[in-house]
Length: 141
Image (cartoon, rainbow, N blue to C red; front, side, top):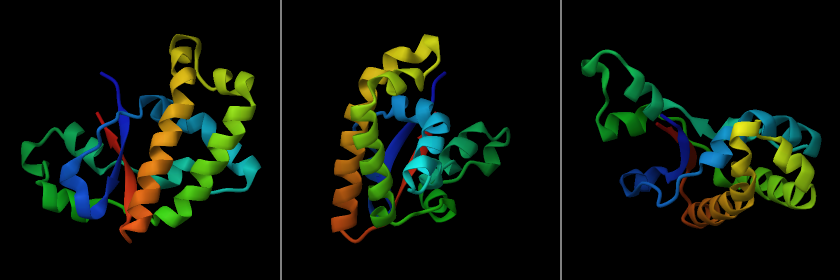
């Protein structure tokens, strides 16, 4: 069972995301050091694990409804995330070998999807910023 990231705005959580960002999820651990080198916030800063944790809970009583999950989640300023996303996108577009080496051998097919997923995230996070909303990358299982 694989996990992925969804771009969610706080005021539109029920809309979900029309795109699974699995390459981005699988690359986060290796992208964070690149973010540090580039002088931007780590991508992992913007992850929210509430949905994942709720789905992993053994106790069905702990499963949160949508409103409680929304209230438990961590939300972030899209204005703070856009420099990270743009810097990563630009860097990875110009460093193809490093982009391919981000993934372990069995996941290298994700390297082709990574730029496209970053483009999608930049677009969605930008739209959320224009709406004056907060967002997170929801870790979904």
